[in-house]
Amino acid sequence: MTTQDQSRRNFLKAAGQLTVLGGVISLGSCLGGCSSDSVSPIENTGVKVTLVLANEPTLATINGYIRRVFTGNNNNLPVIVVRTADKKFQTMSTYCQHEGGSVEAPSANKAVCNLHGAQYSIADGNFGKNIGGQSAPTLQLFTTEFNEATGIITITF
Ligand code: FES
Image 1 (cartoon, protein in one colour):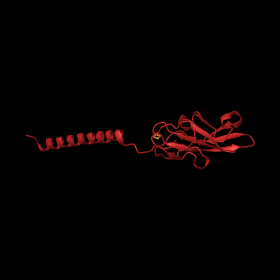
Image 2: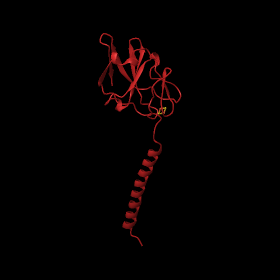
Image 3: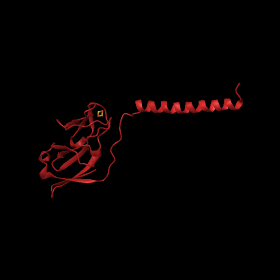
C-alpha cells in the first residue's frame, strides 16, 4: 500500500523522466531535419585585401577571373574575382547559401555550385545572382574597387 507521499514522489519522478525524454526527442528531430533551405552568409569583417592588376594576368581581359583563398577572410573559403567591365571588378563568395556547397570556377559566363548545381551569373548586371539549376540565394558579394592610376584592386571583406 502506498502512502500519499510515495504517490506524489512517483508522480514527480515520472514527470521528470518525461521532461528529459521530451528534450531528447526534440533535439533528435532537430538534428535530423531542422535545416532551413538556406544557410547564413559569412559575417563581413571590413578587412581590406589588395591585388596588383599587373600581377594577375587572368584579370587582364573582361570576364577573366581568379578563384582564390585570401587566408583569414570569407571563413578561409575561396572568392571569385571577375573583371566584369573595362575598369570594373567584382568579387563573390564561393559559399553557396543553399546548403553550404562550393561554387566552382566560372565558365561560359556562369559559376556552378558543386553540391546541387545552382548556377550563378558572373555578368556585370547580375553578378552573383542565381540564374539556373537549384534555386538559391544570391551569393555574398564583397565591395571591390579599382584604382586605375595605381592598378590596385581592393576587396573589402
Ligand atoms: S548547396 Fe545546394 S546548390 Fe549549392
